[in-house]
Image (tube, rainbow, N blue to C red; front, side):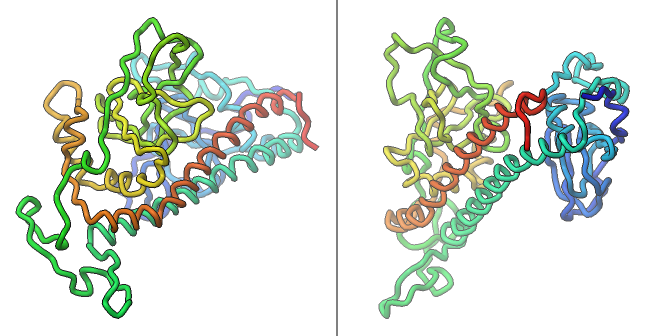
Length: 397
């Protein structure tokens, strides 16, 4: 092993403001992650992105042209000394909180980063280890891209059928045509102040699937292990559940109804706080997830995937988020009830059209859940291997 300071291996550069840039295909990153796409890059080579302010644990890596804002440093790496992807994973394992120079918002200076002590094997060994880690991360990224494409297809057809009203109809001659475009009858709806297909009704979210509340676990039940519980904080901005920081409860001698136990494919929604209205599909987990109070729970039945496509894409609509924000505002802390969620308007077509849409996309969402499960397994394997690879306990041939 060779000893270095981080400053021996790279140069740190400041990010810049992006607001003057036009939209494009170059990603902009902040300390919280991806922000937008722009038409210019700040740097075109492989780089490790280091937080200047905010979450100091959110170290990022990119090998394509990018832009960073002023809360995030980027780096120019000396590839003759260090393999960038190896160094990225090395730094991800460090606890940087003791280097924090901020009195309020966590902050890091150039000097604090430069003075970090690093132990490195020879460059060929770094490259072999990076290759193993990259293979795992590439598969995770591929699964994420597949899921994004599947979700995009479901969203596109939802818009085509339930927003533009061009759902398929079969004519008397047996030819399938889009309803509105082919002259399907439209009627004016007083509630929506616009035309909708004949036979469709303005109902509510609760008419399709009701949101119910979670369980009020007693403070004395919380423990370091046991059954995992989803709290409001675990529903993230990217509409996923953060499984890495779940709380646990001891229910060994408690009589807790199974209605508070979520299944893969069900949907949870935050009802209080900064993430109010954010929702997530429940993933596969080793142990079933229990739902805490102030988390709404859409129980989609024995096989959630059969009802999930229509529900999740209805929640994805702009009007749903706007309705939640309107209902939740007015107090110091945003808050919404299950009753209010269930009473949000939803334009419902015939049962046959909904079932057809769900039938088309049930396998898509089943695949999404399986990909998420595989990603959890790959991440666990990577995290198990990582320290042993780094300290030489496991050799790469």
